[in-house]
Image 1 (cartoon, rainbow, N blue to C red):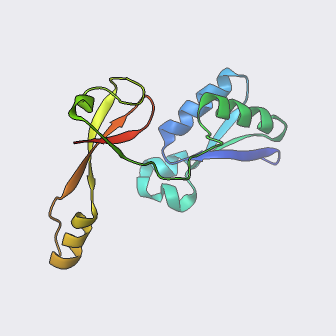
Image 2 (cartoon, helix red, strand yellow):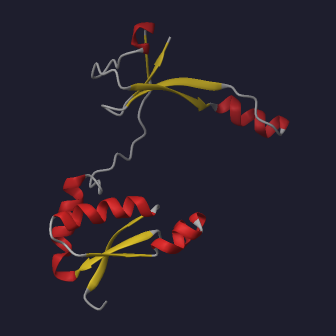
Length: 143
């Protein structure tokens, strides 16, 4: 494996196999390393650096651009935390940003949740109800 380099690693083997199938569909030969170790003991994935994908050195640039195009690599991750805005109750079933209906309600722990753990030793579920849109990836609260 002299001329093979690691281009990406994944936490779970099935993610690596999807990327491998994607690259092999574009005629790039791929080797997966540490797959069986992670399958046997899932918690070792972070300790060993995940399931690694290796490609030939001369095809690494093409593979990286394909993985970015396919959505496996995000070149511009958003570093800033999203603001959670408050809307009226009509936005329980549709997204106020994009108008999509692909939403879910999430319960997030607030500062009172953490404070109850520190003071009492056990959590009291003071949770914030936040809605999340899978289409535009934004969150909001409803009055």
